[in-house]
Image (cartoon, rainbow, N blue to C red):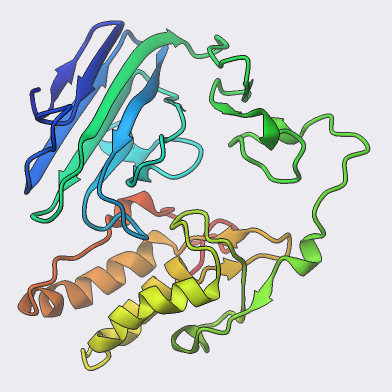
Length: 285
């Protein structure tokens, strides 16, 4: 299979190189899907097996929407996937979408096979087992009226009467991971759905690897970023905040070179984080 390229038909498919065999190491493929103006793109992973780590640092698939010139994360949920669980169907809000596949030099899995089709943004294309959000995205029926906003527009929580929500007051828990204390917030919430970490114990285990970098002059910037990713700040309603993009860019600016000298590539694409300084949207001290 071709590694990347532009797909312009109203429907089509693409797959990782060598699919269904293992994909080659050190791979970077970029696909760009373009459909007619005024249409949206619904993308579905039919099979998916990509080397998985807690935060998809090594092998991963990323999805972006074209927003003028700068790619922006697709609306609704994470845009970076790895592991063996099928990602949810994604629906773009525009007629162009970019898909990035990155593989490192290590272990390779069998990759993925994806299909897409163009449809009117208002068309309902969800399966009978799914709920259709106001913007056309699909969510599992179990997510309707469960007390969490799974749709970007919150439509899965409209018209919910007599539903018992989780007690949000008890969702926040004190930050117990020593490395992440004293960063301007003292409450977090688990499980960490972005990085698939079940509890603070799991986060502490992953963060142990980073403690070897404590001697770096830029460690405080790095600590702020990785703690706000792995042990995120809890909001009063029981949600969590991702770090603002500025927190990530500050750490990258100061640490990329030092990490490079240790043979470590900068692991995070800062563009997937919210570009805002609004404390309601993301965290920065």
